[in-house]
Length: 405
Image 1 (cartoon, rainbow, N blue to C red):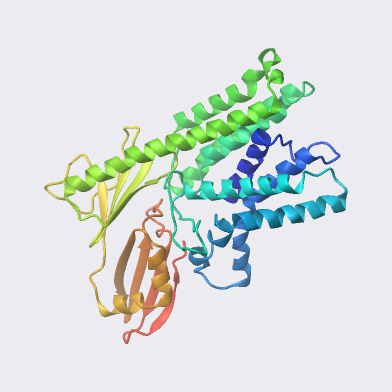
Image 2: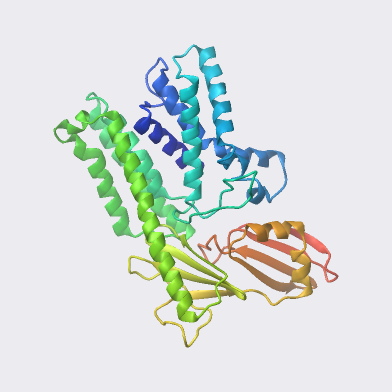
């Protein structure tokens, strides 16, 4: 999950469950605002591991370091105590009315835990048991960047702010709706540019829903009667419901993958159903076999997500639209590349690896891609593709990630 969404989730939890207040409220700073700030900071703290990239040229830290120690359930209590102690020192120095040390520990623990859980529901993998165990559990429920979930987490907080008092209510409610409606159009444009288009009907539906959420509570000003914490609690419950719906959709998509595998009588080594933007209806089914990876794009809404079949089988169900990514035939260059420590690390990380091979003049090119990360546009290389260039005598000329052009 992206760091911004983690912070928004932390602030929502603080307001819904710990009586937190808006972080930028009126002075003086009180304990309710400090609780919100602390839980938000706790929710983004695990991503502080990215700062190590500034002091290293190791391109593989994204695999070996990110989502490890700072995302660990084992280390969570230590980080919560340290962050609580630092916060306690800071608020005393500023002479603010602060929560107790114990309360701060709980707040930071909840914030860090929310981050770990929201990362677990994605497909990247999170080393939650490090340093005891370096496995990368992944629940494959939510795409790494999910604007729908972000909006669900953010909108209740804005509604609670807009309906906190009568003065200036129409301006706050109408202005908030306009900003979010414009944001929906912007997200649609972004989705189009990266190969995840959103239909005009869906955009209009989102704009209408946002209008209802922001403007209907202004009818007879009944929204003023709703408690601040109640708006945020409603948002938290809706977010949990959204994740629950994703879990149900994932189960249905996984059943589709199993049906597909059975129809082709595949020798399944590993399979998965991964979220595919822009909605809960779209899923990317992947099946790892001894000879390559099958990809099945699914639309649970009944529509069609076309993937041209690269191979066909007379036994296959003609209703399936899929693509097969074959592994390159073994050769000395591939074997030499796979002996490299960096390539071994890439293969350790990859859940659905595909090896490709070609020659460029006298040079041999070996590429390993993890199809867990979908190729959104055909004119761009797949994400997480590692390339090794070898000379005719198998000497490594260069290696590293393939960068988008």
